[in-house]
Image (tube, rainbow, N blue to C red; front, side):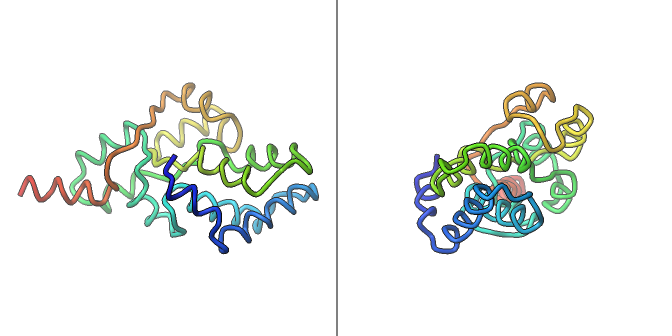
Length: 173
């Protein structure tokens, strides 16, 4: 785990959202747009160290499927690549929410934070995402089983996809 990202748990912006998720989960509230949005923001910080729109995350996230990386190596433009990939939570938010609620009063802000750091978003091909859907894993299932069943291999590249792509482009020009 990236130690800089782990330290972000103390960021007041994140801490407020962690407290909110904890209170809602302990209260056995239904997961709604507000809780889902807060979990997405926490996940963004746990993945790339900041919040941002989907396209920004795709440009920065170093966690991706082998197929998404292969597509990156062959793409003519970053926009072409962004059009064929998507952000994917290896543990769907629905599963995370059920887990948080199951812990009851034992749930802590630290646990929620470490959960999203342990399961950062991955960039996968949209076709891989469709395969997860067809296998019944749209919003359920555990990370290892979901990805094993869908033949999705996750790797972490050394640089952001955008920097990697521009560096390769400069080398080839």
